Image 1: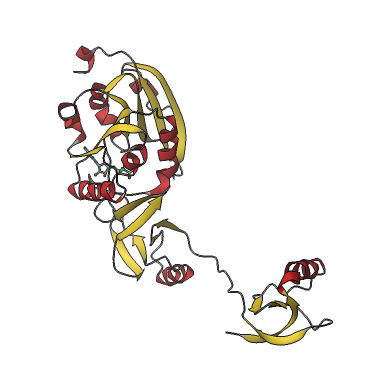
Image 2: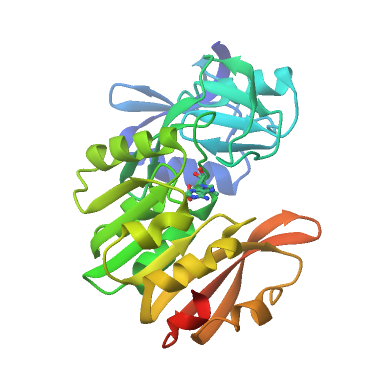
Length: 311
Ligand SMILES: C[S@@+](CC[C@H](N)C(=O)[O-])C[C@H]1O[C@@H](n2cnc3c(N)ncnc32)[C@H](O)[C@@H]1O
């Protein structure tokens, strides 16, 4: 809503200089928008100074502090069941279409959450863009989190062109699709049929043609994938260690396994990992999970394998 305010009418060519002078003298009224009128600008001032005129100006909307939420595409996910806050979030950006409250933690074998609608459109499906790739997501059907986008880029930068990659817990395909541009082939498995359907759709949306989506329990991958891999992604933080036998059957000596794990101390799995044939193990903090637990990634370079040990 416009209101009558004091302002200076100046030619566009002088606008920036006048604005800077007003800021220096503490006379610019920052609560109102500069109005454009043909070749002229109406610059709001806080009082009736020399040359000021009174014109209709529009106030700048006051940015309220919004409640905490995580954004995935057009969906905002709140940590609290707060319909008022949800309404404020929905109104804060035109691209938000839905505000949800996660009623449960990730659970079940497919690692999905239960959601309650707080505001906007009743859907858990959205489009998400990451480094130019577009993903179809459905939060109630298949796991997705934007929080590992930095990890996906880190691994992409570690890769050499032409690598053979396996993503053992691929979900809707964010790692596989990100890494596809450097890989010769990526075998991307998940045991959630809905995740695999979305992964196929996402391959097509991003015109990626070197991913082999596989609907399978990761334990069976050694019997399904031909040859050995240069790199394996294991992003199932609570349970991935249980699949290390399968991973070591699939990795070539010198190849790298990226194992994501939920730990209380960074070296928690180090001794266990050393029982596998490894040349080198690095680990790094990824993000906090709870006050006493956090995600780490172990970058494991595989050693020469004596298959009789891990059969
Ligand atoms: C934490 S999510 C990671 C998904 C994906 N990598 C991402 O970053 O979005 C783990 C995925 O593993 C799948 N999963 C769980 N247990 C599995 C198993 N035994 N074999 C294959 N996939 C499994 C779940 O369905 C889920 O999609």
